[in-house]
Image (tube, rainbow, N blue to C red; front, side, top):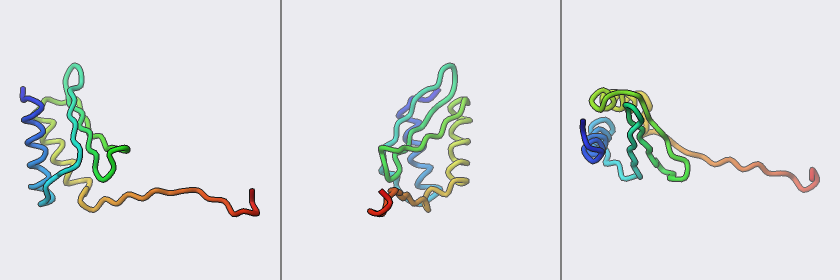
Length: 91
């Protein structure tokens, strides 16, 4: 079983390997009981993080996480905030 610090180091290396960038956003890793991991990524917005989790052993989770990075294309993610407005005469 790997430590959470080792898993974090591997995940950050995956960002460099997959996207050729250094991940500098917030990253929090938690263990899921009885087995598994949950990774919280604060990509561009720490108040609305993205989670990637699976009930797998550490090694299998890291393979799963790397595949998710390839599948999700997180280097092209854009976030928008929509605000609903009303015209004055509609109130």
